[in-house]
Length: 118
Image (cartoon, rainbow, N blue to C red; front, side, top):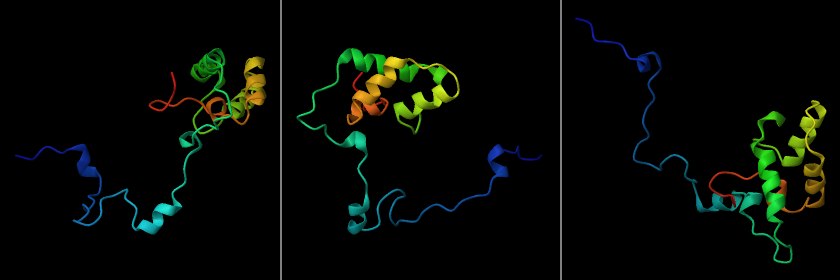
């Protein structure tokens, strides 16, 4: 009687890593200096006021609106401009708010799960 085949049988086997360093770790301490900090990880300038909660809610609704296309990997302003070029008529107040708060990462970048404010 033949042993039943599994879908994984059609893929090549990979060797497991030995007892050395686990995957995803930096090789040396000197490599830690090369790690870049994301803009969202940087603290906000203390002299800069926090954005208005109503503005953040309006931007959140823009983020969650699929009619303007995906928002992964681009800023909110880039998404707004792409939607405008495609004739999707994104809301004008969104663009005005993004241009007004251009230096504030809480406004410029979309909220991401796990690190957001909402």
